[in-house]
Image (tube, rainbow, N blue to C red; front, side):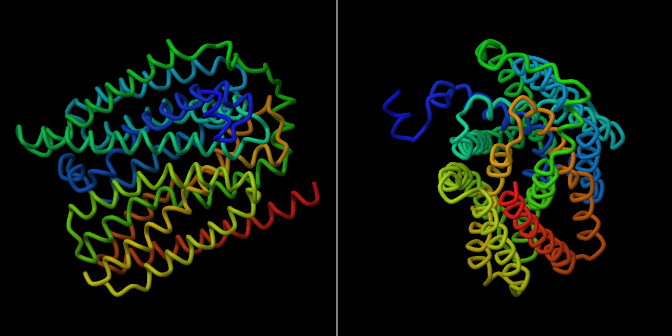
Length: 416
């Protein structure tokens, strides 16, 4: 194994903890199966629970509101308690919520459930993941570490997705779409709880520890770090795009006339692109600099989205749409992994990693509150291609703002 790690260019610390990083990566993918699977079965979920596009957007807003409230405090928790305990409780709690979803819930009850998932899957879980990856890897391997982390998440998601589709089809054959949906919920619930148990029995506290007992004075130090706020704003712009990726498939099927099978194939393809761009981007970032790579990625994503925006709305454009979308998705995944590698580049103290990640997440994941709701309102309010074009125009503006914040970051590093 040492020879393999050496060929991969991993440092001593990262080589020692590589399998633990992959376990954290798997956890970081599996836990979001339940809160977000509705997007993969968008139309079936609408029909099964008698929802509108706007109501679907409300679920995203609820997750965002509770995430915003939770992240900062969750980051502090991640710096004070055992990461193993945090990950285990988060995974098991989220899985149990899945079994609650099997009950005959109305819209109000579903809102409460998504609020619960906002706590279990977002509170201390994500800051704990970020801190774990950072301290389990070498300082000069941060790009590689977060690249492998996001790549591992992508591989797990790519494996889970077709299994969930098979599970859904079994349920549909037995009865109907609603039964298929329940089978998917059971699938993700069991998998999430099993992952929590695996973390509990396989992750040793001695590898990560219980964190430093930071004080309120230390929290103030974190809040005064310019790097934290710049990373948060860059994450904000990138996360707008994260939440918007789900709407490219219904654009292809509903506007361009692509088949449902095409939409499923596109969803599968993007999941396998993810680990390649995550890992490759991590290695590239350690060579050319995180800021340089982020800037190029934001600009390419904006240009690609603009290309899709001006495409004629007919089936002859499906091939062009596919090429543009896959290019956009490749560079999006490069960006997604690299924003966390910026913590080391910005000299944020390692002992404050959890709190810093919490602050960054509080700012960066604010789009969860409004992005899905905005998309739903625009698509419902402006039927057909118009609503999508308004939304894609909004995305282009956010990507260009992200590029501006990256340039501010590059200037900040020169002055630091």
